[in-house]
Length: 485
Ligand SMILES: Nc1ncnc2c1ncn2[C@@H]1O[C@H](COP(=O)(O)OP(=O)(O)OP(=O)(O)O)[C@@H](O)[C@H]1O
Ligand SMILES: [Mg+2]
Image (cartoon, rainbow, N blue to C red; front, side, top):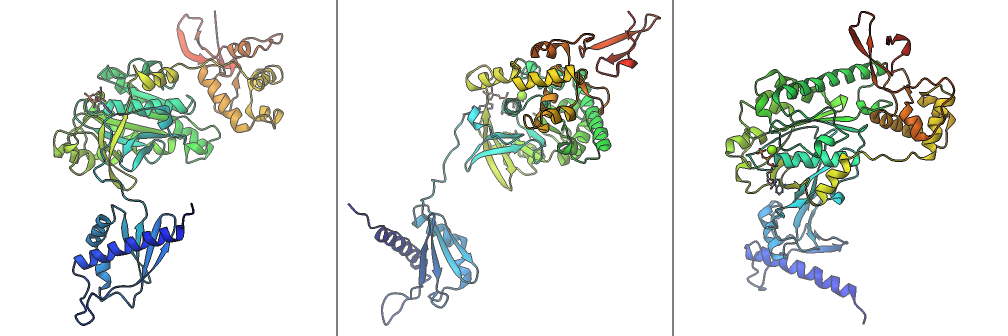
């Protein structure tokens, strides 16, 4: 059988054109010709591509229909209805072109599924990008490190806030090592972020379950911001990602903001929101009570991205989104948000950390793997111990192992090993990290004579008088360390 594609295309084009003319006639836009009978018809040249048919109108034969009437959106909508939902627009340039999509449109009443589980394949590859959920147009993503680094979320009890926070944390923990991503969590309800979150190797500090701890944690994050600012100033860079050894992205999650309303902690949160961008500090603040007392003007203005679950009233919706609408969201996990230049209803991803993929993912990210070292890693440790006197000097190692491992990979490796406690944390940014006994053992490197062990632990120096002095890290310059035993 042979198929005459030419003829099929012709039929398709003629079909569309008939529907277009039929609509014009129905709307009374075409003039009758009393003497010849029938109507005056516009004329056009049809062009096809893979996706659309373009009817380039002959501007001298518009059948007396004025230009602005072709541009009337009601007319386009009526054409669309006559063309089985195919999208129709009229482009207005030098002339007028009617563009008709060749695929019929989806029925507009498509409803989002009520439950969309967090599955591994939904997690995007791009660093710090997470999947929020699905909208009618498809998946919706949040860029936690830049565009969406300060988020306000609100909604009634049981609307889905904590579930969304869990999904975001798990996705980031899944694709980033603790040297790339850390999280600080305030969970004053004390139920949502228990196991396995309290085992995450990505925790910046222990999860805060009471008000005092939460205040301290928020303050510690602010101190970290100031520390980072100082490091960046001395390195002469204005963006954390430009550092030779970038900091991990630090995400501060506050599940209920009402506890901090009108306190110093809230002011600190606003500071972090305002100034954390350059230092790689992001935050998400949630609340059950989106009232103007809790979310005052300062908070609202600095948490730029707003995600509203169902609210009790349109006033609450107004506080979060700046407009009403969230009061009519009708189920758990469904959120209203303004992202990428448009309002979207998003069914957020559902995570159950006790079950299914959610449980598996939670288990996987919360248990730090203890990998055997690769050959190249063993060689690096051996070189550091025997040639560099135990110092893990990235520049020297990069030179020695040029072609086998890049400086970038070396840097990341050093950060990861430092996080695990396998390399010491130097007291000064310019000092090198040192290989600990643990790493030497893992690498199976025999220790040289006179190796005095570098365990990276905190050592309390006790003065002769028997009083504890300031803790001194074993990583520091050991000449400063006074251990009297
Ligand atoms: N994205 C979702 N998809 C489907 N169901 C969801 C979703 N999010 C939440 N739910 C359902 O709603 C319940 C409550 O969700 P969640 O604990 O996240 O609410 P919340 O807004 O944090 O409430 P509260 O303010 O009381 O802490 C969940 O146990 C789950 O059954
Ligand atoms: Mg909650």
